[in-house]
Amino acid sequence: MNPIVDAAAKVDFAFLIIFVISVAVLALVTGLMLWFLWRYHHTRHPEAENVRESVWLEVMWTLIPTILALGMFWFGWDSFKALQSAPEGALEVRVEGRMWSWAFIYDNGRRSNVLYVPVDTPVKLTMTSTDVLHSFYVPAFRIKRDTVPGMNTYAWFRPEEAGDYDILCAEYCGLKHANMLSVVRVVSDEEFGAWYTGETDTKAADKGKALLEEYGCVSCHSLDGSDGVGPTLKNIYGTTRQVVKADGTEAEVVADKPYLRRALLDPNAEVVKGYQAMMPGYDGVIPEEDLLEMVNWMANQGAMTMPMGRSVAEGEGCLSCHSTDGSEIAGPTFKNLYGSTVAVLRDGVEEQATADEAYLREAILEPEAVISKGYQPIMPPYGHLSEDDLSALVDWLKSLSKAGG
Ligand code: CUA
Image 1 (cartoon, rainbow, N blue to C red):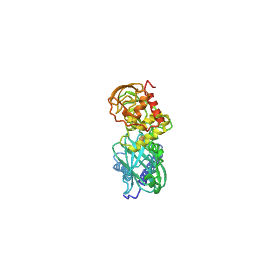
Image 2: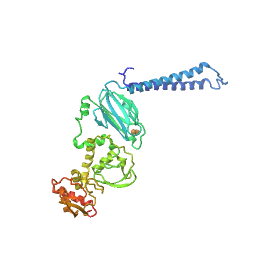
Image 3: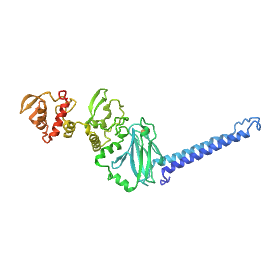
Image 4: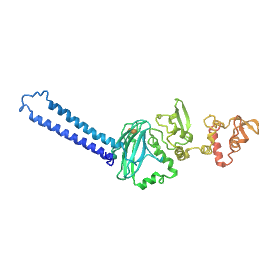
């Protein structure tokens, strides 16, 4: 087989052969029917003939269809093999189908939801699926190949002209199957080089948004507030959400950074009420730096809706030691802290204190002065906080308590 003959040309040739054979058979059968109609009309042929045991006839009607069927099979097989065998030195791209988007992963770790390729270069696709069966379909390059979970399938093509070529999913894969669209973007060598090495990257500010698009999040979660298969991401940050946990219990959570991170890595542990537990987990799929960009982008575009004190608490890292839901981390929880009576050690002497505003301020600015009984004196002082930030923080702490809310 000549490897220079592109797979697409072989597919076209197989199509042409099958088409020509089909037309010939159609013409032959129709012609014979008409001829028999005329030739064996009862006026010309009143007595029906009874043909029996004609070896010649039986051999012909066995042999001819067999040759035709095997011939069509041969050309189909030949093009199947050609589509499978990429030439040496082809650009290798990994294709991942998932509900309901395509991800293209390059050798240098670059990821995209658009298949960027340089013009006139063979491109080898190694394809798989992370959930159900999909089918990678690019009509322009005569590629249609299933992507199968747990298995690799292959295809290759060589784009001859720059431009965008449609990618579709050709295997019914659920609710948004019809939206599982992308394009092959064929660009010049220079353009591809610049894209591949990241020189034409989006500005840092929009990186998180670009990543949400690249990972296919936006095919289920809109950015404009409209409802989709999943909740919209517009102003998601800081909102209070009713979620159903994996064990069926319900809880109220605030969409803060830790929540957004959990929702990406292990989405089905806390599903927003009213939605289906169908999102694939991205643990091990999204590298840490991408995860940060995405979470930060959601946080920044929603920052206006978040109480300022909460942003301060997040920015200062308070929440890694103090929970807001009553659970214990390294320090006392913020929930219902304001107004409560706490046992503290002041200069090593135990006393009862009321967690009022003055107490909270002191505990933030000089934590070592008042250690809550039973906790380690490990909190650093936060004297660097501006008065605005400090009062916002205290106001927010008040709002977390029945006494202050
Ligand atoms: Cu994926 Cu249809």
